Length: 300
Image (cartoon, helix red, strand yellow):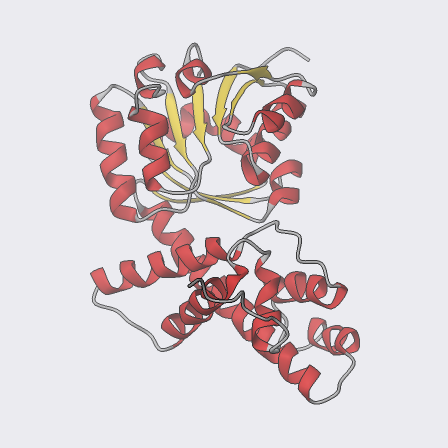
């Protein structure tokens, strides 16, 4: 297969690693960068090139995918001492994939545009398996000309490509709306399963009913199936929905909106984090709400 072009990927954890592997399968050259060397090594074994610094991932790339945790890390990747922005050729695209505040997307986009770079506001959703097979969702906001130029890359990354507009920040706004609902759905599913346990029901059979009935939600079933199996190996840490629901509430407040369910759901993630579950899979909300988790002793 003739390579389609060079893409740098900074942050090749669960989602970024899946995206990088997907691009390799689709014929792109990939340069991978991450603080965890083993993640880069795994991609090198699949044909990627290793990059020690974000600037190394960016040099000669047609596009740079930033897939780190938050706005501070994104700014460091792009504009820090080893930052990628200065190493990108004029006109190259930066895909901002983390879930961050719309204001941060706008501020980063302004700095990138001043450097002569194209910006794609492109938060993602769907989990590592969907990132790997290209079926994850991408919520894309960017100028029409930028979209046209990089559409092939975006479509190779995602079979569920949603063009939400041209205004930078609208991808982030859409993702926060989605993740607030995901957070509410998961907290509700964990509460419902905890109730089923308290009522003496078989949890697996209860989930079978929910799956085919009005209480069904993808995230609820996915995570509560793990909970029933006792599988809390982190794919998506509690800290992520704690962060995302918090960002959604902040965005709502800035727009003069506050609903009743978002704050309640966010409070559940806060409680889980304070109970020592921050780094567990977010299926661990069941442990919290079922009273099965013993918090670590308070430090003296």
